[in-house]
Length: 347
Image (cartoon, rainbow, N blue to C red; front, side, top):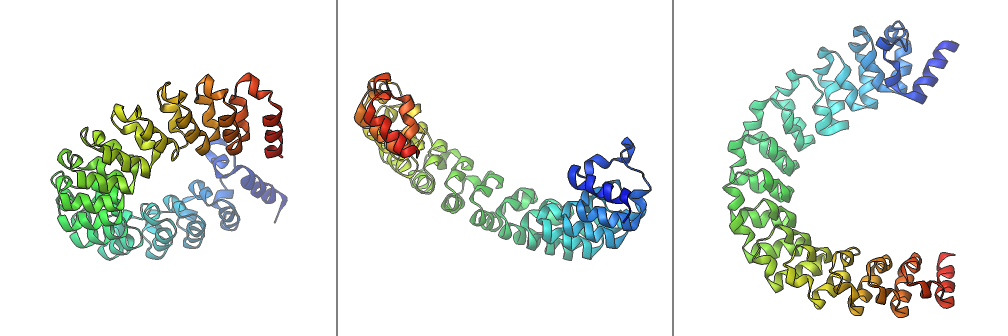
């Protein structure tokens, strides 16, 4: 291996293929046509294939090498090799849907290969020939593998109950891509919410006001309260379940709950950041502050001056986060006992 080639390979390793654009005079085009040299370069960075000569881009051995190292390199191959079944399979099984997106149109229109693609990664449905996006068998395979594939299905199949149910069982928020009528279907909604509570966002308005469905959603994810109806956000039982599941859900509840001490304590004991969102009067309450700093010592920063001057609360805060002493009152920052505790916790 001559010195020039060694230098070129070292530069490629350090700077990457993007610095070898021949149109900018960064490399001798002859190098990009040399099979042996390109073999070494592709082994270092497959993206160099984009600058190779047409002959190299149509070299089955070199393109295979490039795709084995990086599935996206298929983008730079000749049209002929993009439709080479063996090379396309390498891209598919290494890169899933992204890899399949690079294969030639000939293979995307091949039903057997399209089925193989969605079996590998359901989201390959995005790249199959559009005729297959309305092929029920292919779509069913796709959504069973990946619920998100529902977004690439034909509208008629997005309105197919069995197809949509299969999708939301796989991925609750595939509910977003269901036909509007099915988004108001109780059975479909319940199935989606059992998988992902935040799928409530895509439910019809009447269903967001259905307590059974909302309870299912918030038991799965308390933050799903954000998507419930105004009436549900004002329901004490619903709000309590939501904040028990996720303390931060208090931010989505009706205003009266944000001013309720019991609900504030529950929320602060389960969420590190909700304390700073509370009204000033609530951040002056010792019991609420204690719940907050027990969960997150740094919450002391958002407490009232009286709370920051309360040694008992500051002590609890420091035990969670010794840097919380920085947010204590000036007098407590100089407190010998607290300073010694901070030093011990720091060490």
